[in-house]
Image (cartoon, rainbow, N blue to C red):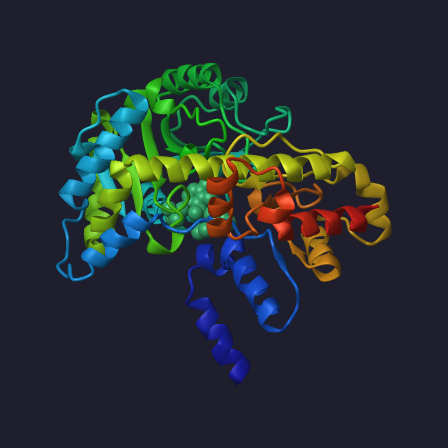
Length: 426
Ligand code: PMP
Ligand code: GLU
């Protein structure tokens, strides 16, 4: 009888949702924290969260506005939309107005309601961040993964996009491009963006350019696809990465005038679901997007720290034969363990999920398997987030020393985690 009742509940969940599991990134974070609570030593390279504190002046702005209690306009607080528009105008040298900006409770939610509102299917490169494809499944879209293994950077390029689109000339597609990339850390040059823009224009693609790690391009030279394909590009960003405020939940979409219809449709969905983003957070975000000199310094220093740590980890892991795109931005690496396949097979490891489970059990290093990013289960790849360090201490260190010569002084867990991985492999 009990069995029947359980089955009945299960049947009431729509099929497209019943087959999904909780998001891999959030699951590894909660599992790692559970292991730590049980007294185990875990190196938290599974979850991608900024290690840096929210800048003081943004925290102070939040304190000042804690009393803001009214519901705000659905598309966002106007002064914040103005600040976001000026920020994008400065970054891209293109005129962006407050009317082009939509604020949401995290860019993840905006990505979701964009998919929900758009009448067409989804294209994403493999590998890509874990949530795009499940969002397509929830919104009942077909999700096409384009294999990028022919490109050493593991990014979608113009010729791959062209060959896919030429096979489906009559379909409407939304493409999500993310650079610097989660999970590979690679990013585009201007000429690669220009070439992608030409294909996008030819096939009238709607592109969501997920630039949430744009400010964290290590050399500070991020360029946006919107500069080359303005009419069809929505830029997605937010406070989570460069401002260290993932838990504050604030994301931004910036539209060209040609896509105002989509922004309006998304605002209808927002008005019937989350209503508006938290008021005090929106007031505080104005300070962040004004991007004053202290914030500029904070972001510059964050970049230097991330660059030094990424180069260290990249050097350590490639020295033993792991291969991966060189880190250029954000806080991820995507090592491929193919060189060790035979050895790993002998240990009973034939998939990326088994690989990550065994590494976690035997070394305490948490990683996320390549399969969660759209790779075939048998590809022995994993995403490594090099953020297991105290961001505040790292910023204090760099203020004093100007650079990070001694990784061990700034990120001792990253040093041990690399050591553990190397020993486990050799
Ligand atoms: N895009 C990418 C590539 C991400 O890694 C994340 C994870 N934070 C998001 C979007 C969503 O970020 P948020 O909802 O915190 O703005
Ligand atoms: N973006 C982060 C990651 O890839 C985590 C946050 C999330 O997935 O919502 O690990």
